[in-house]
Amino acid sequence: MVALGFRIIGYCFGLLSLYAIWQDMTSPGRVSEVFGQFWFEYSPTSLQVVEAIVSRYLDPCSLFVGIGCEPFLWHPLIATTLAWPAALMFIFLMLIFLGLARVISGRSLRRADSRSLKRSGER
Image (cartoon, rainbow, N blue to C red; front, side):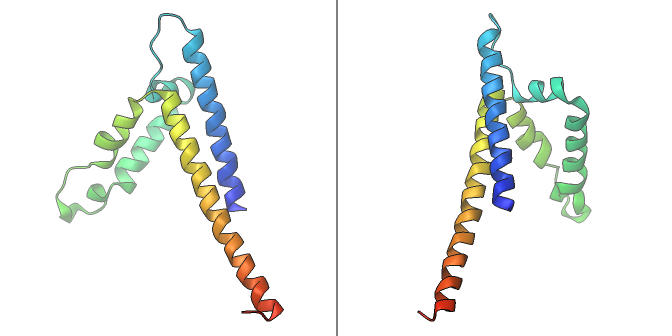
């Protein structure tokens, strides 16, 4: 069931990549749209919420004050990916989610095969 969810999310990212490619091809004289601008045009509040969550709750430097390091998760890493072309990022996210779905479904198939062998009495 989880694999099916990842597969659906992967296909949605694939459709978004096709839309971003179509949008880049139909707008003359414009360079391909960056991922951050694409996200900001369609959902600016979610971009701000994700930035706040990642900076405050997911970055290890902001979670543990005793470490004494600068936050590194949002500004160098995620902000860099926000400057990449939107179609490229959507294709990358599609491949990640479809790969996760394949790994998860592959594990469940192996478990089912081993259970059926044990039930039939063969080793």
